[in-house]
Image (cartoon, rainbow, N blue to C red; front, side):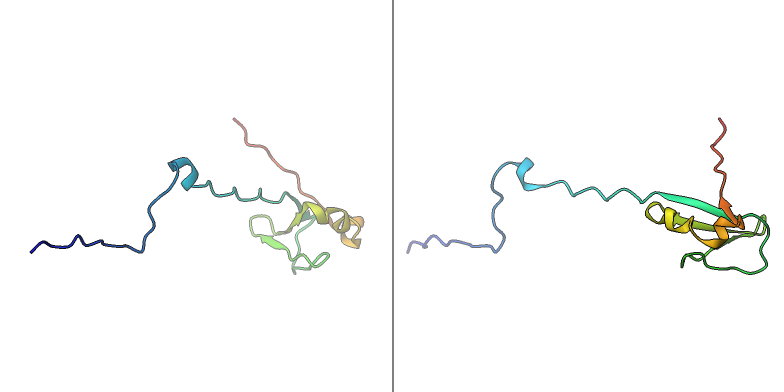
Length: 97
């Protein structure tokens, strides 16, 4: 008795095309938004929001710092605390080599 040729089927499809077309590169993550840093001119005993942005306390010097997205800088600088110089733009120090 001759055995009938049995076909085995699998659920996984066979790859088609070249390897270059099978694997697509994942899109790159969007660049991180640019920010501008501001700080209180003097030491502040209490934190206060400016334009709805909460401060970060810098414990090394007692000042408050705000990380402001680039698209909100103009609105931030219209605030009373910035206009009266209670909040100023933070001086950014470049790494010395």
